Image 1 (cartoon, rainbow, N blue to C red):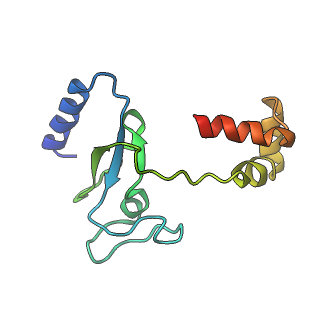
Image 2: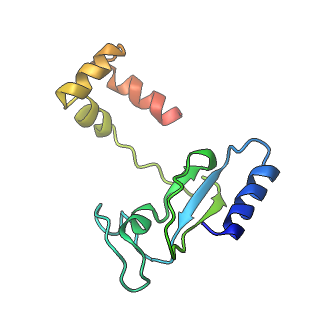
Image 3: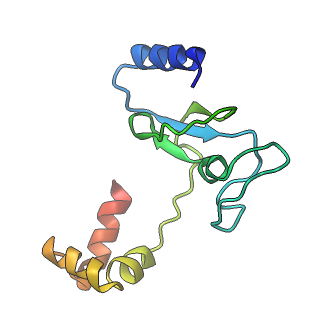
Length: 128
């Protein structure tokens, strides 16, 4: 991170009232984890590393964004809104992920959730 990047970050933090806004990470690459079928790859055309491609076009809360930059990194965070975001959250993320694995299922049970609660849990997460 350059001195200019540090100054920009400080200015953004100073002029935002609560730091509760969304940013999108942008790389020089046209690739992202979705376009690469879930596999992080280096983009040789623009010399973007695997992690920059994996994080490209990912949206974060400003206070929870990864501070991953490296020498010659050209990624930046741009303030954005969630107006055009499509939620990709099928209920199978709960029924076939949280309750399919014995360890995760045990964890959910300790929190008071059973597979019968999947619809309620899904709606809670969807609302959040």
